[in-house]
View 1: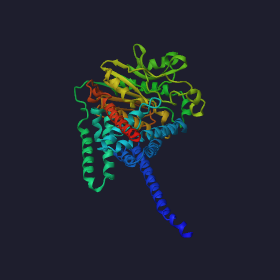
View 2: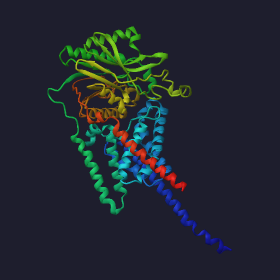
View 3: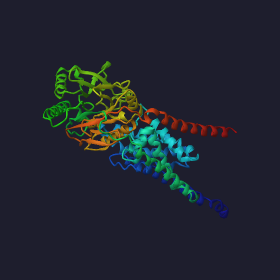
View 4: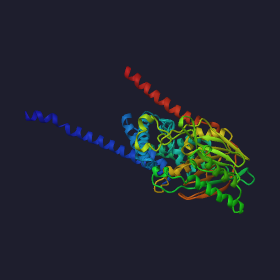
Length: 524
């Protein structure tokens, strides 16, 4: 009896060992995915170690390849959490709920998108399919949910990379594809069997060499005799407070920008500074509609007349039904306020509350009593030789917003930002990430980009992506620079959304084909 019971018990030890081995392997893949997210985070400012944009996705792809969709969802979620939580820590100034909620939503979305990757990574040559999938995944999260969140795309980590010039040819999606291809080739080399390592090494070398060709694709630097304009950026600064609630009680922002503009006018009269053709104030340099406040109207109008040049004022304007617009308002010395651009891509839970009846009562969201109204299209402000188009804060991350502005005839791009909202203890995360995106846009569209921020970093960026002037954080400062004005379009402008659409269609078609084959196989 004893022997009979002992005999069937013997396989239990090997079975338990196999289960432990599977758990160890799964845990190892979990760790790889999380490390990949941390590495990808470090590719962006403030760390700005751009080569890690290869290593981070490579770790994720190594974890996902050979797994099932359910496991891939878990790996993608770990990757997303490890990347977004530290990368978006600047959102903590709005409270922990917006920061952690957005990070969690983006991580879960990335997990869901990663669940579709295993079927593509079984195809050969799988690094090409991985690059197509990555572009498709970034396209989805740049559009959904709630209008999407285009921050932290691989392209936006490459402002200091030799591959930067590819943005002028293939746009930001194409640059992301090249980085993802290099990451996939790196993963293939690290996971290749001994007999295939030579081919994998050759593929990685080819991908890296292709990326390096971007250094010869940059737009030409400014030349003597090129069309240009003198642009001034006024960074008035705000009192350095720790929380959004404290900042919202302060009323000095407009006064600071009026004072700084007066100092600029005095410097011009004294001959210390060239007279600007255009002056830029940041986003929310006035949070009250100056058209409805006579005292405020007079103060801004006097500052504009004093400096003697049109000023793009970041103004909150009243709209219908008690709602408001976040705008760039062109204020001219001779005619006052006129044409304005309204921000098209609003920040959920920052500029409007989705399902306000459900979420509006939360403490962290009570500082947003009114919803902003999105704008409906590009606006080009024309003054002298300048045809200026505006992007307000994080919407510079949306490809179509900037591309439509250039196609509408803009020869100069502005980015107005109120970075004080997202800065905590002098954190450089959000300003540095925004400047990196602006540098990509400059190269992508062969345009100078001028960034005006309330507390920094304000900057002047040439069409080849170089920063020619920048301010420090939490200071009052003014930049006056001569910038090239260009009208020539890039291949990226002419191709428009097609590279992204083609890569996405390729990935979706392959996933659908694999799913169809699996269904048909099960029915047989």
